[in-house]
Image (cartoon, rainbow, N blue to C red):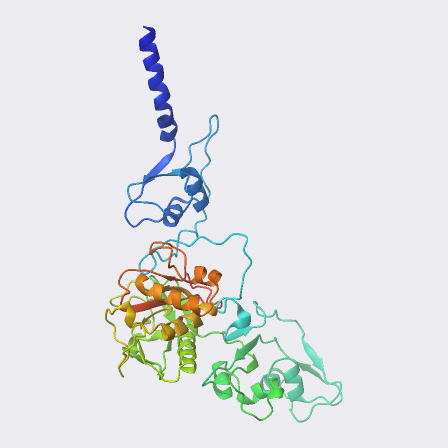
Length: 436
């Protein structure tokens, strides 16, 4: 009898862990699952998943059982986890984005401003995030020596706007003591001229006259402004006319800009070469950087960005909001029609030119993801290391040598990118409806 009782007791002890585990919610890892994606789907944090399952890294394997909801403690009722409804929507989980959201570094200072997110380094910015509020009765009392042009400059408006707001006002006949309604203040835009820009084009872009731009920027004198010059413009026109709306696989594009011709690339299909104003500028700027660095220009090929209005595009699951671009790799042999879109040996990669193109986007924080075959990543990594790129930047920028399934790195592996790279640019800071 005592022997039977002992055997029964041992069986109960052996079953105890199973009973505790049965109170927790578990899932079985499927092929293609990553830990970040499972956490997102189950409404828990990555740290919680790792803690509950005793994981030291993000690596998991198909068939592995994971605890995704911890068992309730005795005499307590497990409260349902509050999940932000916006946290699991508008995230592009479809190719070419299938890694889950990269974990964010903890307690690390921000190293450099991100050009696309930081208005201070963007092509055009508003000096304030919000439009100035209208001040009731905003008037100016004319002083001795005042001119209507000077008053317009002082209040960031135009002579035409002042005469319209003050019926009967004669621009050449104002007098001290006269009260002038200077109207609602216009938001101030700072626009940085780039190669090919003109003062007239900038003025037309914001619906003002070249004469007014010169008045607001008197330091320019009569000289034509050079690239890099910042112009102050007072206008209610949007900072960026184009808008990337929604995610890249369920989005659309408004006021698109077409990629212009360039000596550094050929465009396969002009009808599919539309993007946001920022995407187009960043592509052109990167090829300008390569052109400046090398004596002889080598021609790449740009295949697809987006249709004029965005939305679904044949042969792609993304490319819907003007932020994705497919571009050929630089190779040792590239013809007049551009580098070929075909598989090639890694030894044929023109590493120097390829890194120059990529580094421009990486250092300016303009690319959120760049899909490059893992075998080519190795060549780029070793080249960049020889050129003195810091280990911190290499770890942040390139997936190699941590393995093709490591979810960290701007440059990362994705199937079917042996013959071309896919770059996805970040959401411009001014596109409030854009989704990463």
